[in-house]
Length: 86
Image (cartoon, rainbow, N blue to C red; front, side, top):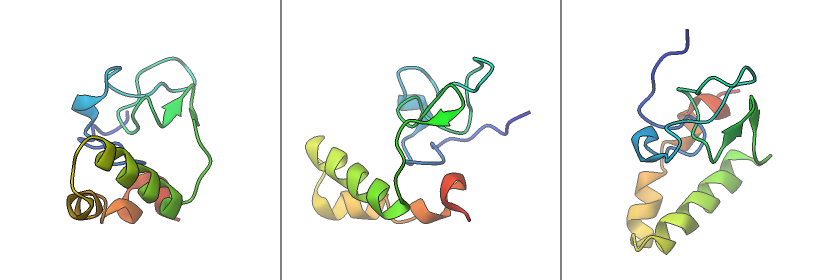
């Protein structure tokens, strides 16, 4: 059984903010590890590095009216998320 995470282990979005409440695993079950924007049918929706993902998320947060400072602060721990631990 997957452990329940509060944040997507790829982009750090709170899973409670995901309209689908999580991505989907290969068997169609809801992922409690990754959000629906990052993970569908047991695969990541985008192939990118952690640096590219952080830049993508910072841009999205700025679009959502967060300051650049806050966006960078909110994504600081991204490299420690499950997807990026290698």
